[in-house]
Image 1 (spheres, rainbow, N blue to C red):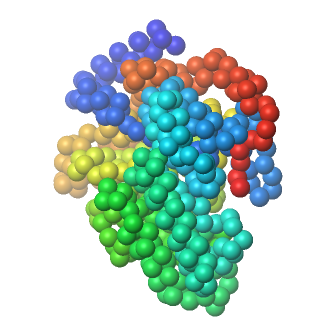
Image 2 (cartoon, rainbow, N blue to C red):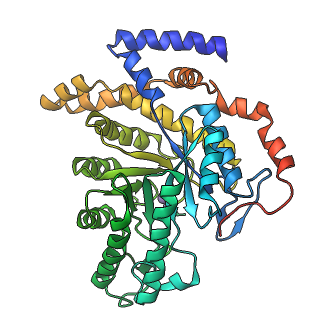
Length: 404
Ligand code: RM4
Ligand code: MN
Ligand code: MN
């Protein structure tokens, strides 16, 4: 790989430079890319039809973080890991934080889990019974505390709240109940902390969902205050929604706070990002680049479940797909694009995007990973490292982590 990569890297740089690309600045931005992996992506997962356990899967939050650290070691761009409470509940969060740091990573977004307990059958923060809403509010408050203890400044919220049948409950009353609960948690957040609200059109609720789309999430954020922002999960849209346009709107409102990357073919499939629709991913990055121009803080997180594919390899592939999408977006000639737009050159503008998208940026991404102390080909390096075999041996006693 090395000598071939060296040659293809030199050729690529030569070509890009001839086209007027500032390769140095592209390299710098690629090195600064930060992607957060999810602790729940390392445990066993499945569908409602079954779960297929894999060898070497972590048994507890500490081991999930160790796996996340291995992904960071090989790619150089995944310095944080998101946690889900209570899936990752531990007695001593300070110890979890120290463990992460000793493995060279930090803890990122704290995700409260308000959908699995029996009490939440009719919802959590929108539940008609105030006692259940109290329980949900207490969990949110607990998660603000957890975030403080693990050194995180992001509370990332997704609610399964919704109804299954027309007439089941009042849309507006539910909205007001949510606002009350969230306001309480919002009020306890320290000034640097952000609350991210993630929308999803359906599932598990099948008639209506309380935060169904970006408009519902955005207006809730506007009611809460500046520290509340919207999180876009790529799997959470109706099929024909133009996600890059949603991204642009939220950016323009200063309310895009985070991303859950994954890919879908049908519903909320949580497949490897870039595996189904890589062009869409590229177009999303083209819009996201605007955020860097005005210094917006966006947390780029993966939210995937690798049910049948090897988990660690899948995570690494997701990361390299994101590096490539970002690199391609960085190659778009903005000046020429603006010129084409202004002069009404429809296909000239469109072809500028196609040119960037068609560029094979893999040598550039490989070089970036090496410069960050990772591997040019992280999947090959992972496979030859024998990590899975070692973990299968080390972790053979006890129950593997999974949903629930
Ligand atoms: C949801 C959503 C959330 C994730 C849960 C497990 O569909 O994507 O982000 O925390 O699944
Ligand atoms: Mn998500
Ligand atoms: Mn989802």
